[in-house]
Picture 1: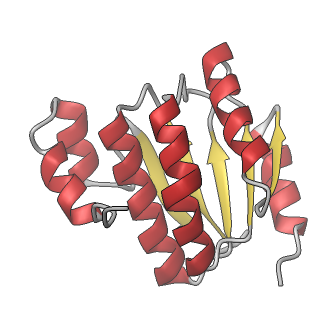
Picture 2 (picture 1 turned 120 degrees about the horizontal axis):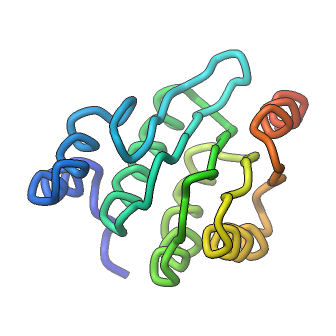
Length: 156
């Protein structure tokens, strides 16, 4: 298996994309694609998807999340997947086979999410969650319930 592309490499490729990709590369914390921040009150990395995401954008965000897990010593992720319309099968496989093992190695132990509003988004996230057996995960119909569960979720 080839070495994964770093966030820096993916960011350079994003600069060649449409405006949304350039804005994502410039500011992971607030852009048209998503917001990614650390919330010490949970504590967790919080990802809020705002629109359809390309494969390159999805991978860039995941690599940045991985960097943030390491930087903050985070063990949890909270995702608001409401606007996540689909994750293509090749990207689902990449998350499961490539990214998730590296995230576990970095310290990820639990995740909670608000389910996508669209059918294909739900299908995509449900498929990933069903196969990510090592990850403590729960999906909810509202973000407040997801946040509350994650706060209460004990990780060792």
